[in-house]
Image (cartoon, rainbow, N blue to C red; front, side):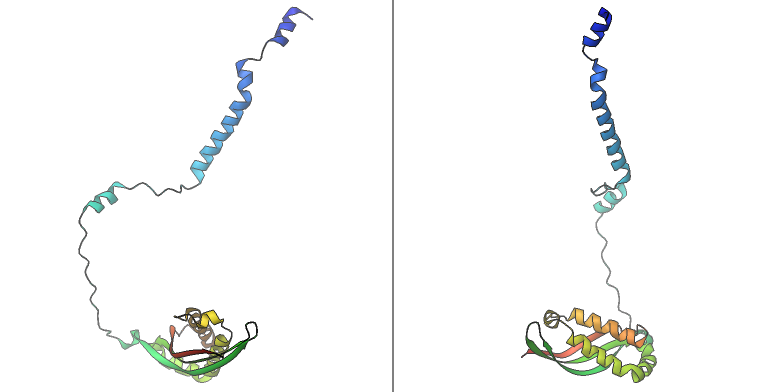
Length: 182
């Protein structure tokens, strides 16, 4: 071997050779940051716009109360319909509790759909009544003791409209609701 070859082998690697790997890693990290910045939304709220800032400085306009217009057309009003009185007794084997629920159920329908509703209830009223009973019997104790009875109302509303074939029933209302555990 010649002396030039020996010095080339023994010479320490140049600065560029030492920095190749760290520069490659730094380049990859920078590319990742750019991709994340461009393609993923920021979690910070957007900067306020000058128009919105100017609007904040103005005193608020007085809010006008909407005037209640009397219902000119009776077809736009809702009509309350009687769905009947119910008395349900059920036993829950899991908790070994028997309960009794008594209530009167009303529904609301659009007043202009009264004739259609009456015809449908003549043919499907017994099925509606049966589904109300099934819904109450299958309810959990927590649902029956809920102050607003929200889940039970939604279930009755959904099954009633399904039986009627149209979303005629807009809401259901419980009155004289009594729940007794035995």
